[in-house]
Image (tube, rainbow, N blue to C red):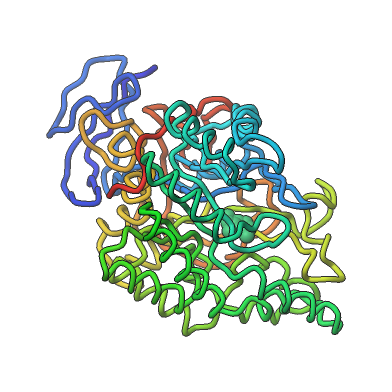
Length: 469
Ligand code: DUC
Ligand code: ZN
Ligand code: ZN
């Protein structure tokens, strides 16, 4: 493992902003100081004019994941390579229990799939059966495997959805054992009625995905999840929050001192439901859950970031190709060509999160560089039991570092992406701010457009207590 010196950069963490050199040895930050002198054999990188930030931490991805009749198209190799090119050096991915099986079996499967990761990865567990044995298994996951967060679905009845009693039992177990519960908060029962009615009436275009998932049903489920978690005394994390009503529930809970946290995603900050008016089947590219919302809800998301009622921006990278080829129908939106309810729900985002958030938060909304780092790296690392190893730059932390040019303007295009996905939600969008070099535990993995990482170069992280900020 090489010794690396990053010179002359402007170091930004969630709380710092200063000029210094960083020496990384054996994968960890060894020294931070002015004009660090080194001998031969040290790899030196000049970061003059660049921001030196902790590697991004994306706590919401679905790599190589079976979802109903579909499978996400990125392997751990391609997905984490894409992440690295986008300045993300740690990913927490969702693995799942299968019905009738132990969640430990789901984790074993995830260990095999994630062995090709190029950067460090950790797992959350999606619980599908909550019973005496699986509740015991949650303890094993937390204490033996370092899986200290669980996702519970309040949507997709008959497939993923849990009833309120199961939510409560799983939450209580998590809370008693230092874990956090993530929820997909939508009222699945009501939504299913709306979906069935739309399909029966012949309303089958992608736009009906959005019309059948009303924001008040996200608000209702978010409120319910918060109340149940309050009784269960567990920290709660609302994933992919998109609606003003849901944010209001989070704000209300936080104001009462409840340990509820929430993330939103770049697509809710930068896109609206107008995308569903695209011609032909193009709107299918934007079929993710929850769907894109109106400007009113988008403004609420920005308010939440400002007041810290939203603490994290992650991607929900859940990539299904638009075209059927070259990977096949299983990996493609075309499954729903005649019926929106069959379109695999999910969209890509891993590769563009940092530049988009930088451009939107810092350049457009005037947020501080510290807040940018906090939202994309520090807070997710803290909330999910990885801080300070991940999420900051300090003596002893992992050498996960991004050299970021705050001035370069470039245009997003899927043609230049490293993910296997064949489209970008942000095709043609100009952004200011670009990832130049990326170090994963001191190894230079991205150098401009050059890939220097390798499949299997990532480590599987065992996490400590989640839900502590
Ligand atoms: N929820 C997610 O978090 N990802 C993909 C689909 C979904 O419903
Ligand atoms: Zn979800
Ligand atoms: Zn997701």
